[in-house]
Image (cartoon, rainbow, N blue to C red; front, side):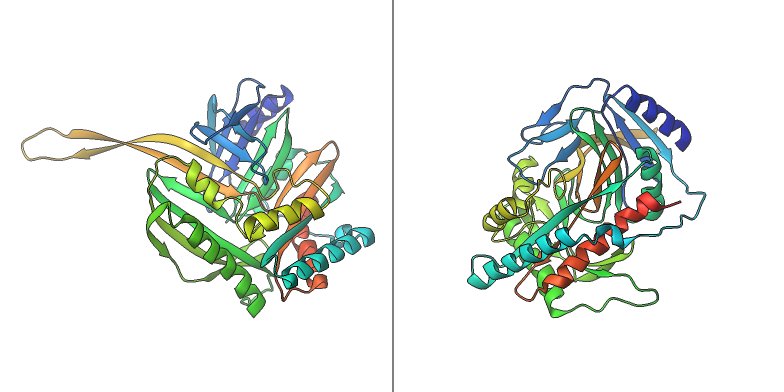
Length: 370
């Protein structure tokens, strides 16, 4: 039962031992991976097996949770949460002034020709007295179509979130990813209407990914653009799939991370602008997380006339990584909430500020939910 899983996780947490618990999009199953020591394991080339937690800046270390034990349970919400987001918590005069100036500087750099797009973000701090396990249950209830997680390591910290964006899925050598960008608030009984600016922002991401992976993937296929909803927000998405040329994850991860959806274009110029001007460390926000190199064995039987059933075994190796959006970091009695938006030549600074307020409000609902 789910309560039993939470009780075991709570004991692990009290012993200050690393773990991650998560649910994949539109799945009922909740999976927990527990590490039985407090060692800080890192990944050098993504050849290990376990759960990876990687930062925005790839020059920093990617943390690996080793799955010494695995728990599974089904989560079924027995209550309808009442989410009331107080956006006033995020409308800080000093923070607003800084972000407006930051966006204006980004638009200026785009006008000068050094950037085509840059994703600019900020961090806001809220009081939070709820346990991470209560917050995780709220996330599971509210975000059925997102990758929901709670991650803990005593030497790194506690993070949780619900992200709609998949970085990649690799099953043996079959590859899939997505291009996700642009944001609108959900309005009841209304479909989103996308502006030219938002369509261009999303197309930049699609074009970049297509170029970045072309030397690593064959039989590339790209779906039509569609609108998808995550919580109270809408986004634009294309799906991309193909066959990997290399069995190693390292080349494709390097090609994809960070994408223009969380960084910008040209990539190195946008990243340098972010590191120099955002005035805070993103840490694991806009990094990625998920299972790597998980092996499973499937049995299948084949009937043959006048012969007994013959059993065949198929070994599958799967990696499934998600971009760490819509997340928070817990520190003592506070929650650090992160949000950003893509800046192009047509961006309006006030609108970009309001987009960060809306995104932060989606996570504050998790804290305020009853």
